[in-house]
Image 1: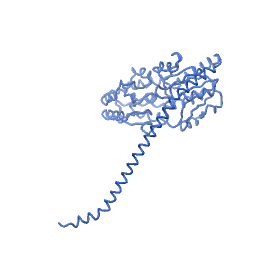
Image 2: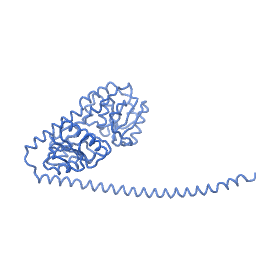
Image 3: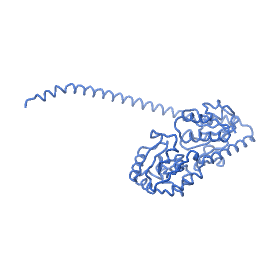
Image 4: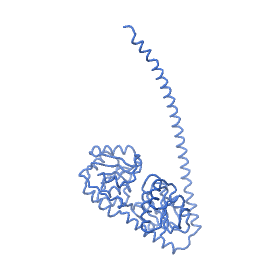
Length: 390
């Protein structure tokens, strides 16, 4: 099958959608499909994908084939691809609620919407204006071919890791640090917020007993044998155990708001409840249920279903498609205006900061001048003091 995959950017940071679309493109190509990826912002991530023999396009018009199905991630790239190929149906794969680029667009040729957690089903149905049966749930998954190594845990957690590319407030980091110190556990920090994002987590995660993470990062850590405490800006959940694994999976291992406050004593108590036997059972279940190979097989079946339905459907309604594009463009106006306002605000803040810096420089120059005068006068002052009469 000829498939065009989209993602807004494949630049420098290997976030969840970048890793997923890269792994998916390679896996589909290995399964005999013709694959290309459209990303309007490219960099080291796209270069790594191209090194694997996958075409990465800066424009959908550069695609060497007419796709039979478009696998869309991020609405701007998805709608651009739909406009470029008016004969191709699509699925839209949404990986989260919050980021503006994830919001599902409405278009007659988007045959199915895919979410990565059961908790997203109702929201996706409302946003897309489709019945819930048009929403397919494919949980996040782990590429077991990469995450081969599984850690044998100690009886108590000696090494912990705060891991991920999502923002976490400094006071949260401080409280986790305090909780770990009180529990006798050494804490490391890895990820974009700490300035040390990694490209091969499969080599690093097996070194830790306990990992603080959410989403795909949490899933990968569990697959490596680590115990996991979901941790984000919203708080810090308990250690995931075999009984709670399914419930956390329905939320994509994210922390619900205001239920698990970031309190040092509570986090310390959770760390001390560490059970290597339960963590090992969680690892076994994760590796059995959340295989990336299974996700690829499900997506292949979905592509086949969408294409079969599309080939027997009536011709596309050009008026309906134009209206969908018009409605979509109307939603971009406030976003662009808001971005312009934010840029203006940042510029004003920068100008204010530059003004403060200039004043500080003047004060520094004045202090340096006074210090120079003082040091020049110091020898004569000391001479007078030394020669003073007793």
